Image 1 (cartoon, rainbow, N blue to C red):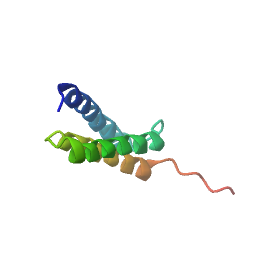
Image 2: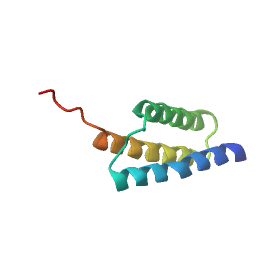
Image 3: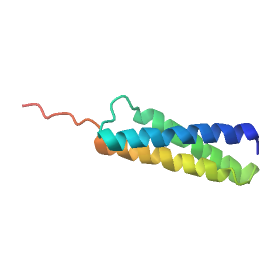
Length: 88
């Protein structure tokens, strides 16, 4: 466990609730990238696997919390994404 790893996870984790709150409040997700969110989730999953295999400690819970926050934002993106209008 490293204080820098904890700091990185805390800073990233602190930012996601603001993004989630904005999506819930405005019901708009323009400017968000689902590809970016998927890449971030894969990164957190890799961090979780690493923690379980090589360096088990309580920091795995920060990875899991961050993953859940990004997943929530991704789900909101899928719910509120702009729909393409059917051509008439």
